[in-house]
Structures are given as C-alpha cells and as structure tokens.
Image 1 (cartoon, rainbow, N blue to C red):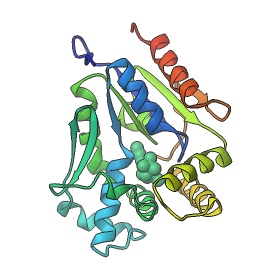
Image 2 (tube, helix red, strand yellow):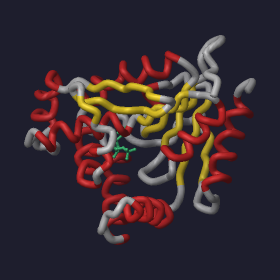
Image 3 (spheres, helix red, strand yellow):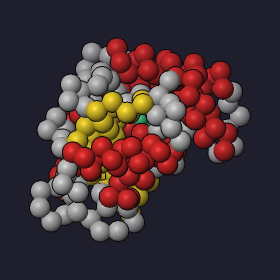
Image 4 (cartoon, rainbow, N blue to C red):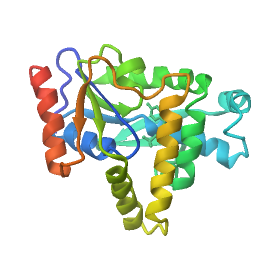
Length: 230
Ligand code: DC
C-alpha cells in the first residue's frame, strides 16, 4: 500500500449517524486508495472511557470539562490501523464496549471536549491523504476537505448491522436494545448545540440502505475519485 504523500494531502470527510457503516466502509476505501483512515469517534469514546473509569458524571458538562487536563489522547497508526491511547494505555478495544457508546455521545456534547480534540484531528489529517469519519468532519473539523460524503441508511438497517456486529463479538444484547440506543444517540448527536451532526451543504449524500458492503465501498471510492485527480 502506497501512501499518497507526494503533493498536498487529500482530505476526505465522511460524516453520518450511528451504524451507517462509516468506519468499516471508510477503512476499506482508505486501504484501496492508499490513504490513512482516522476514526474520530474513537477519540470521544476514549474521553467517555476516562469518565466512566473515574466516576465522572458524563451528563454534567462542567464536571467533564474540569477533568480534561487529566486526559491525554493519542492516535498511533500501526500497519495502517489506528490505535487510540488514553494516558499512554492502548484502549482501542475497550472503547468499543456498548456502555462506552452512551458516555461518548454525552461527552461529545461538551464544547470543551470538542475543542480539546480539534487540533489532534486536524494534525492527523494534515500528515498525509486521509479519510476521516465522524459527525462534524465536513462541517467543523475539515471545512475545506477535498471530498465530503454524508453516509447514511435507515435506522432499522443501521441497528441490524450494529446488532450483527455485537452478536459476532459475543454480546447478548437484543435488537430492540440496539435500536433504542441508536435512536437515542441519533437524537443526542443531531440536537446538541455544539457541532451537531448534519450534512454539510457541499457533501454528497450516500444512502447505503440498499447496498451491501462491497457496493458501499465502491460508491465511496467512486465519489472520491470523481472529486479528485485519483
Ligand atoms: O462513531 P462512534 O459511534 O464511535 O462515535 C461515538 C460518539 O462520539 C457519537 O455518539 C458521537 C460522538 N462523535 C462526535 O460527536 N463527533 C465526531 N466527529 C465523532 C463522534
């Protein structure tokens, strides 16, 4: 895999709701195009994990903000895979636990948390051509991204995909729990005051409800190629 580091790095922003398949599709598209892949949700998850571990009430913005000087988050790329370190500890697996998802959504509504993670995200994208996924990449983090994609699918399809993923990992959660959690997080992510999830005016809408994984990756790669000189 060759990194496109020659001229100015290409920045691709992919935003969308929970379970739209952003991370798996973006990761595979990045691999095929020789870009790095950055999953920004992992950073909010690491802050959420810190709060859960330390008994910080994630619903209390002032409490969360007061802890941020104790939180050091790093992204390390190992063989093209993004690992996330919280105060020097690799937490890449632990942040995926379902109980951390709600905490991540809650801390992501705190403006100080968003501000604290902004430079890390921009620095990562500036290093080399990158596909970065999240909720506010095209609107706030990389407003001048070369390509912006808003990736979505119906709530039921997104919940089904997330449910299958969790089940494969041995979780005993039910489909109803996953759908309820997804609807709650969708609501919170789109209604928060700071950097709510919304489609950037210049983003291409990609609905994967009717597409399988391969078709979704092809769609995303096609949009990127169509908008750049790749
Ligand atoms: O993509 P994810 O499920 O791993 O993200 C976890 C939470 O982080 C999600 O509920 C919203 C928040 N988030 C955000 O506010 N901004 C981003 N760029 C990425 C994630």
